[in-house]
Length: 154
Image (tube, rainbow, N blue to C red):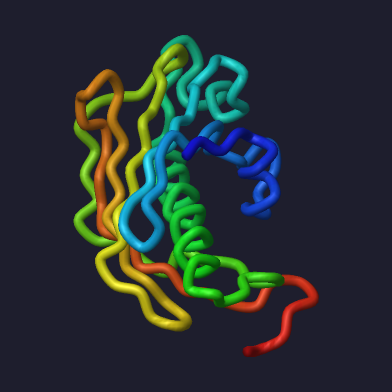
């Protein structure tokens, strides 16, 4: 199952310059998701990180992994019949974050998110980001599901 940018934008509240997932390649609800982020010189953070030596900030790679995880949680919760209307998934913590290689313009990040536990209002996931099969970053993420604009507690 592939999801294009239009489907992603229907699911995630993020927009330019903070939408960091370009396409979902594979999703197994409740288990795992594989997505891509095409890294281009047009990313606004490259202006200052670093002039003459553009490197994608590690925190942005983590955010891309978290967004992939949010797409997975949405697919998983919808599958269970639970509505995510007016709900946001907030990154609440990351453990064991590791950065193994720099990510530069022209790279394509493959983002993988895998659910390790899911509760009504929180979930734990493992995220990995690779470039050409080489690990760029990884970490265990804790996320909280909370009301978004116009939402009410359920």
